[in-house]
Length: 366
Image 1 (cartoon, rainbow, N blue to C red):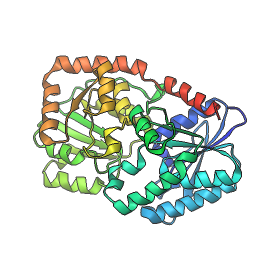
Image 2 (spheres, rainbow, N blue to C red):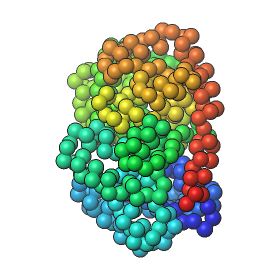
Image 3 (cartoon, helix red, strand yellow):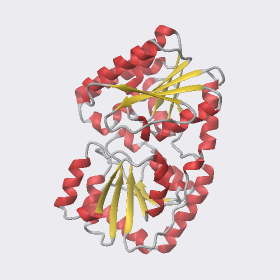
Image 4 (cartoon, helix red, strand yellow):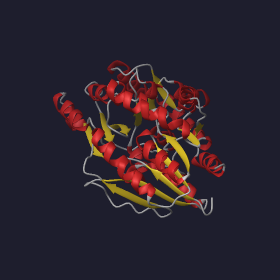
């Protein structure tokens, strides 16, 4: 990887993007000159990674099509005016400038699909918006020199859709980010969610469930479109004192947060093709923390649970299913201990060391 200048482009604030921090650090350690480009917000915190460079683009608009249009134009001209060997579009919202600028400059390009972008709930419910993104996908994805995504199910789906191969680089925490959960000596039991607070995550149902789970608190580590709506819901349900909104938590602080939790929870509504086939980083975060978690009975989770029974799977996002799962795990100490022990076993197999070896091999092919 020496003498290679790699550019990675995202649309989010760089501070909390753990996947990109891992990928950029890994390739920088392999000898590449790596730059990660994102955007700056008025709430952005300093970003000074040790092994690679961070560049933030300032925009007038911060949401909707106007933001994406402005950011894509600014990114396009940034790429045109800077030297690089390989440019990587991290999801579809940076694909156009990466492909067009690199075509002009005759540079190699990579597509890192964090999700099946055109099939996420926020887009599938809006036909006009979906048609725009689908057009961008059809225009760009086939032209990338390399493509990878977070799990084998999404790789198969998108490979069939766009008639090009997708490799898999899973969202697994780095070794220095791992921690072993402990049983805090406290009267309160904590159900922990970490990630974007957006639609399709079952968060409304979890808050509804809290009133039926005495002795439990629900902690949300993250921010998103539904934050204020969920705060209002918690107040209306009279559980505001047992639902804690922690905001974005720095990646370095997540292991300590998970060590306080009793259970992790990671739900996705039925109906989204992306969510049904997803394999998010929080699932592996819980495993590496030795923290049993409640997840959906979807293909990726089932496949891992067949190897290591490290989580409890439910069939649907409903108050009854959530309450039954939490109450069962609360009462069945033997099952909880089994899940914890299996998390430790699974953490030894699902490591960033294995993923990073595959990542470096992929980039070396270019």
